[in-house]
Image (cartoon, rainbow, N blue to C red):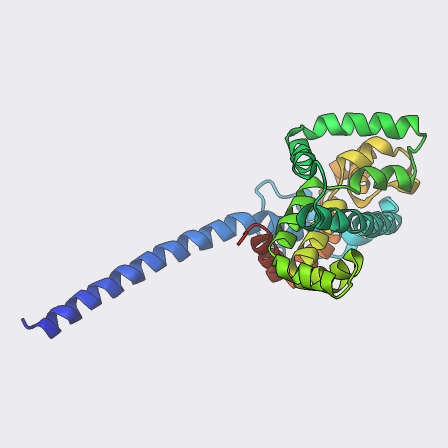
Length: 291
């Protein structure tokens, strides 16, 4: 066997090994995807099942021959789900906007400006991430109660404005911009605010978009804090609406209608993630890589 034949045999063996490895990897990924997506499939399927047929299933079925939209109508009539959607939209938009107003200048200051105690102060901010969230919630609840802000949008929004993690992510991204750009801008007489607005924010737009989307998702899924600080249905969010259904006894008796409400609440986040998934992944990767 000459060298050419030997090379062809080795190449065929290498291709077979690569093919087998790829088959195993994709098979594993496919099974993992099925495990992840199955709860969503079951949620949507249950939301279309008739109440009577669902209760008659001694063995759960993975399909339905009589889909119905009545469960979605019941979800909106049992509780004021439309009002909860509006409350959640107000809470999400205002909280996210205020957070950006707070963390963008703060990240710029930590990444670009020089002032006494900067490193110590930033270290203290990072140390806040080590504090259990339960302790923070207790402190915030006491403060909001003392300020008489329970059952108000201010009480809902203010404790959620600052975020150390998003500040860190944005600061690391700002720090990647070369110092020469800043010094050149200062030579031209550009103010720090104008440099931030015209140079840093456009360059770091992927990370800013990522932080915005992640904050929107966080606000939309918020449950514990709104549950603590509000007991007036006029300020309930969509997550509290699901709990209200269960407390009224409706969720225990009509699971398909409850699943319909969960589907309606989940659709905006699913669409948002599908539209911006590449920006989210790129922004996180960009913010976490320095150099």
